[in-house]
Amino acid sequence: MRSRQRLFVLVLLTLVAYVAAISRAQTLPWGLASLLLATLIAGIVWPHWLVRRLSVVRSGPGRAEEGETIRFNVAVTNHGRLPRFMIEVHDRLPVLEPGDGRTGLRALGVMAYLPGRRTRSFEMSFTCEKRGFYRLGPVSLASSFPLGLVEVRQRRQEGVQTLTVYPDLFPIVDLPLRGAPSQLHRGGYLLPEGSGAAEFSGLREYRHGDNPRHIHWPSTARSGELMVKEFEPLASACLCVALDPSAVANIGRGKEATFEYAVRIAASMARFACARNLRLRVLGEASTSIGIPVGSGEHHYRNVLDVLAVIEADGEVPYARLLQRVALQVVAGETVVVFLSEPAVRFAATLQALAQLRVRRAHLIAVVFDGASFGGPADAGSKREGALLELGAHCVHVRRGDDLMKVFNP
Image (cartoon, rainbow, N blue to C red; front, top):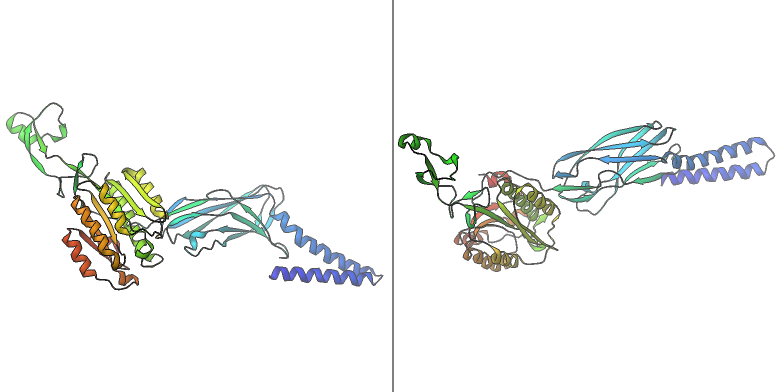
């Protein structure tokens, strides 16, 4: 608005000067009018020339975590021979404005002087406020030098264009898992069925093909024959994380909402599982069905994070329906993680679905959110806990503001 006012005033003065010069046969009014016209032309044309033959590249990470401060390098190159002055650099960074729908420009800096055929760069840093997938840019180069009459802006779309912000993770030391007999020796996290630790069963004579690392040297020295340790058949643990992204089950706002806590917990469990080569799958019924098939390892972990970075609590499917689908696919001994924050009127159907999982010999870990602490209505927490304990579920209670690392590593 100020630049328009300045432009209007200068145009008006120029017109007045020419009107005054026409009515007088003197050189001074014509000189003054010409000077004002030249100033007006320079103020309009020069900013267009300043932003020509310039390029800008933004480089930096394409992935980050919530709360992480990341750095981008912005390099501006002048491809012309003459220097440029007062070049402003702006960028669209929606990652700084989570959830409000705005993608306004953010000033990154001003280059007062950029020599010809040279490149100058600077660093910018910001903190990733909320998980999600963000499209950055385009970067804009602008100038209103020298008079500020008009601002000329050119957009450039070069360098890093997207940023994926993953959920904020916390370490998990251990989880109460069970062995799944159908997954015999299929993972790196091996457990006897229904137990929580590997068990030694005895010694026997060495046979061709036995692992030399299992030789029991003290017994070998006493008997004079090779003796090996024998173990009972071990079953691999497997984990199913069943999220509830229904809108009615999400209590709270922003990062202090139950679903955001659930996503953090799910992502941290995924890191725990994949680091131990434990077979993992993730399910959820948001606006689009989410079904990450069984997998393990670093690549599978990255796939899980990519999904958890963008999933939103916008589903309409009741949680009980998802758990019924899980019950049809579950294998005996599989650990199913459930998240309970839905309204009390839906809990009866959910409890029936959990009972189906127990009939199919699934082991349950129930993350129970205290809805009142998140700003929701007070629910019958004791009744829910009693029903879950009757099913043999391992319950973890989460309140708003809890340190999740301490909650899961008591």
